[in-house]
Amino acid sequence: MVTTGLVAIDATILATAVPSIVKDIGGFSQFPWLFSIYLLAQAVSVPIYAKLSDVVGRKPIILIGVGLFLLGSVLCGLAWSMPALIAFRVVQGLGAGAVQPMAITIAGDIYTVAERAKTQGYLASVWAISSVVGPTLGGLFSQFLSWRWIFFVNVPLCILAMVLLVRVFHEDIEHRRHRVDYLGAALLTVSLSLLILAVLEGGQAWAWDSWQSIGAFALGAVLLVAFLFAERRAEEPVLPLWVFSRRLLLTTAFVSLGVGAVLIGLTSYVPTYLEGSLGTTPLVAGLALAMLTIGWPISASLSGRLYLRIGFRSTVLIGTALVVAGTIVLATFASTPGLVVVSLSCFLVGLGLGLVATPSLIAAQASVEWNERGVVTGANLFSRSIGSAVGVAIYGAIANAIFAATPSGEDSPAVVEAASGSVFLAVAITAVIVVGAALAMPRRRHATEPSSDVAPEPAAG
Image 1 (cartoon, rainbow, N blue to C red):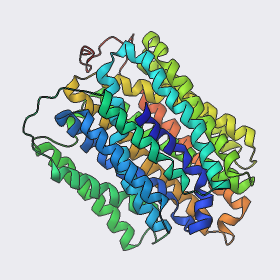
Image 2 (cartoon, one colour; image 1 turned 120 degrees about the vertical axis):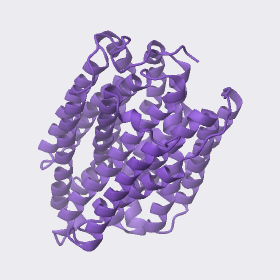
Image 3 (cartoon, rainbow, N blue to C red; image 1 turned 180 degrees about the vertical axis):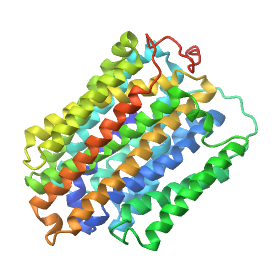
């Protein structure tokens, strides 16, 4: 719960401070990189950590992750420019790549599917608390102290998490020699980095039809194909392709991809939209965004009862319907900004995401044995991170194109409304696509019944 809190607070505390950061060190057009580079580092490292956790155990991996998150937080708090802050966010992202999936995997090891329906409430409470604490601290620090404290606040939490993990978490692992898939890890990292770079900088640093843009897209695609071939031949692949050969795992991965894109679209642009169009303070904008992360844990904590009764697929479909409704309302009323409408829309989306993310992940976990659960959990969260990284790049490209076409740019409330409205429309389209992925999930009468591609649930650890 403590390690989950690190990632949960970071998910909301930064967005409210973006205007203050830009005012202090500049770089408005570069601010989407604060999110995308963090998410990219998290995404490419998740499969590596997940594979290693199935080899050496969960404990050493999660301790490494907390240590990197601590180091990255300190460096971010000392950043002197936007490029430096972006670079230090890479370190923080590499830590988050271990923290989030390991915390969820450990819960999957300890509890059965039925027990997770109850204990999910405890983990959801972390997000509930963080959803209020994160934006509130972000707004208070930005408004009254300094944005740098949004990173320094992680220091005592990281130390507490490491102490607790060392003292109370114990596991017995049968150690044997393994071959590390360095080639696969390198190809995955470079290919995704090039693709994200091409999307985020297209139309900004260079034209979409320039040799830089075309070259980045082409080389990224070629290296991604090379990664797929390398994984087929690797003795112990960093991201086994069998994860995406089973219908349940593939569809839940696509669902997670959409969840990441929807989540980052709102957390990145709702505060900027409110502060730029209505002139609200960072604190008020943060509290409006907090409605999303309040709705999420409320529905996530109740989702266990629902999926045990009607099944994972039906629960996820109910959640996607709520997400679509919330994002459509947000996009529709973007041209007439109102704090109440934005807050209610965020709360509705949060309720939906809680019924989508948790059941789809638990469905994937319950389909495999212990020695595969780390990889499966990592692949699912990898998909979410990729969705967020690609999503923030696409949304950033949309917003920056509108800002660049207007002389007043981000200083004009009307331009901020137009750019944010376009982003919210793109988020709504993403939500509709998630419905299609949810419809493709395997049908089961009850959540505890195995389907054709679901292995029996092993005994609790």
